[in-house]
Amino acid sequence: MLSTQQGFNLAYINDVELKTDLIPINPSQIQRESVSTYQSGPPVISIRSIIRDGTADRLQQVRCTKLRHKFAIIKPAKSIQLQRFTQELSDFMSCPYQSNTTERELNRMRLQYLCNATGSLFLTKQNTAINQTIPYEKSTAKTYKMNAAIHGMLPEDFPWSGRRLGRCAVVGSGGILKNSSCGREIDSADYVIRFNLASINDSDVGLKTDLITINPSQIRFKNLDKNPEPLVERVSVYGNAFLIMPAFAYTFCTGQSIKTLRVLHPIRPQQPVVFFSPTYLRALDRFWKGRGLKEVRLSTGFMLISTALELCEDVHVYGFWPFGTDLHNNSVPYHYYDELSPHRYMHSMPEEFVRLLQLHSKGALTLHLQPCS
Image (cartoon, rainbow, N blue to C red; front, side, top):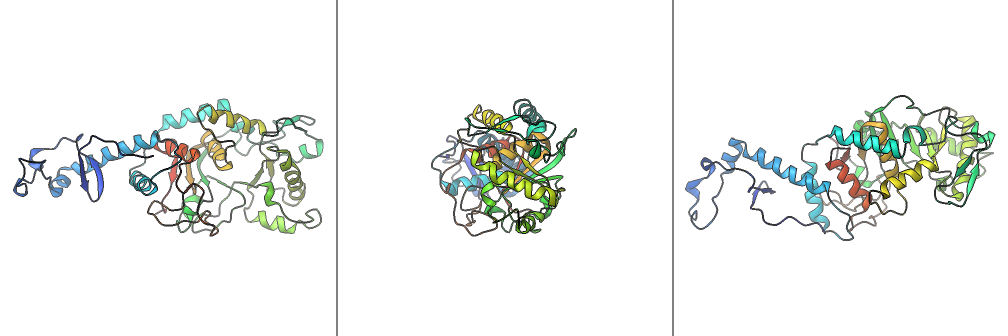
């Protein structure tokens, strides 16, 4: 349950709760002519004089520092007061963002050393050999032997080989992006990651795509070998984006993933189909479980945000919002591209979202939860 700390004197300026006990008040700021009960209570402070002396700015700085600390240590919860939480989060998101280069570099170093998306996010000819035994991420008793035909269709190397990516946009499918006008901002990123063949548009989510996931369950086209056109049309809207699939997460993912590779490789060689490395996904799972995350399996969104934290100089996260109402208590659909109703996290605080709030608060990434200007 989220709760406000007790024991502070509070003032209200423009309906914003501010701690005043930490701010030195000059006696000249007291509007004495309006304080008939000065002896029996605290002085009334003139808003005009506060603004003139710059105290409002100092109060806001303290308020933002308090909120930044609060969200940096926020914990998951089975039940929250959603309206109160979103009001505080809205206040926090109105504070100036503070990037922390040290925090970003520490996260990057830890992720690269322990997980290594840089060299093992997906299978390539460089990191995978013919006849190599590929372990499954979750079906741990099973393995897959890499044959020459599939190996020949793997990419040579990573598009970021030998360099670090600049500003990356990781674009989730949350309904909070609907009517957000974030398209231009997203398209201005150096590298854009999307999920599950989500629809794109220039107004709210942008069009640029460099990497997009496909869930094998989305490949429902009949007779793909003889009639590949529907699949080709479906993926071609993403240009030359890499199409990444969890072929070796579970055994039931392998068939559709390999079929997708075989169908698209000769038709759209400029748009590679690639397979997540199960070794990388296992390492990422250990990384976050070692830091207290209790999810049975990380969401694909959280996986690739972690990837971006390693590969990119500056990570911006859009469309990750687990609740049925936005920061201003307006109803939002589950996805920006449909009208599915509310989320299963309507009144709880999911762990992965807590981690995103913590990372934003510490300056490790930028979490976008409001319309773009």
